Length: 381
Image (cartoon, rainbow, N blue to C red):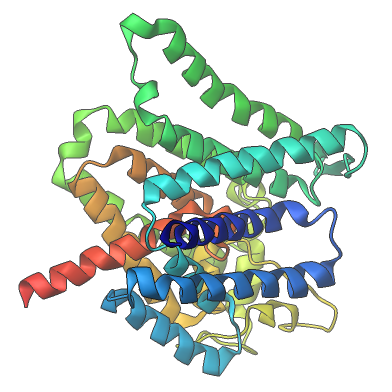
């Protein structure tokens, strides 16, 4: 009976992961109202069932730091009526018995399964495989609703692949062929997807990840200044976003073109007065109502989205958690996890990557990070 309950809880966890990650891939085949309503409600129902079945074997969660954040998100919900972050933290709570290593392995394998499925049906003509032209560049959909979604799926696999097989990327003279295979896969796979989709932001993040990988093999990682720079990375990227949006949004500098005129849109949203930045934030759909009716804006910046839409409170919580994670992993020389963090943070500069567990393995680090913070608090007390 006990083994049966354990198997049921693990089955629920697998099903939740399949659906949460699958949301990205279901766009081409499910109507929008099904995606937004029924599928999300199904996920919430399964998460609630998982939390209930966890109570007896695991007990009530004793992670006060994490629960404090959940309470804050609950208060924020009273102001915004947006269940997004409450859903995210409920999902994280349902995975509390699993390690980050286990979760990111599952994340990798499920993404590989879905992407292979999408590519296969795209090649068969079941899903869209059209080519669009933007700024004179041909970009393929590869079965998704836009080229950036295809590149993001490939990016998720690339990040997970390098984390899971991190040790394989250290050159081994005794296993030259194996080292070459892993290095070749890590280089060729994103290059092919980039060539087909021409998604710049993901490629910039990948280049940033490669540079960090090279630095991690040097003595710089042991320098205190380098660790400080890593800890300040999310704040630095936020500052750059604000500077570009407030002072260079209307310029014709190359940086505007490189980032597909994202800074221009950042400036438009930062300068509008209808919905000013406040502490509690707004509903995530507020971007559709900032200007004329029918205007649907997408703020492609994780940091500015947290600040302008989700509010100063949520922004400070996430920035604090990210800084602590960077500091803790650098201090303990956990290079594989740091690689995941740094690469996703760079990607977040020009994309929204903090708002869906299914497309951001960084979320899986939050519960254990809160546990460590909680332990530190009691230790000092």
